[in-house]
Image 1 (spheres, rainbow, N blue to C red):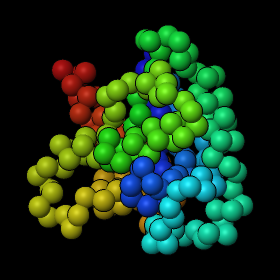
Image 2 (image 1 turned 120 degrees about the vertical axis):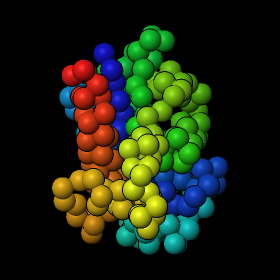
Image 3 (image 1 turned 135 degrees about the vertical axis):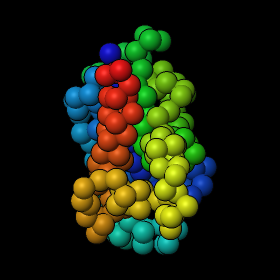
Image 4 (image 1 turned 90 degrees about the horizontal axis):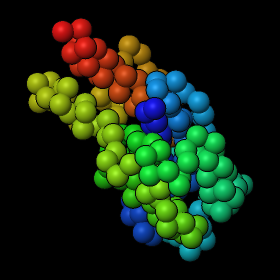
Length: 197
């Protein structure tokens, strides 16, 4: 079975060691079928820094953060969800982490989230080689790249998906919908045609 955890984070800054996660959204897919969807709003650990500019991007306030569940509580819920579908004691039963630029950004924040909750077994849940949809899209759009203003998720989604609601961008759940849509489109076109040969 192929398990993919499509996930996106909204964070309190850009440095995974001093900033935290305030939204963790996405879905767990097994052999192409979504078996779990999640949207955790997280009150960051009080030892972490919060940048106003980062909150502004997500459209949340300091007051919003105070109303969210604590990081340890969300961690427990997240692990409980993973445990329903992954046996962390089986080294052949893991999920791919998939997202937009997750190899360089989101994965680091998620790993730090585990560490802050005294869990050193991040690798028991996830394969070490992530599925970074931005890299996949880079190959797919390499001939169009010079004509694109940037390679942000919304820009690529605008290029590839039939319609998007840009007002919903920077919400982790909507961002992962766009990311998963791009992943499905590209893999279907690339590997669907390969299978037919």
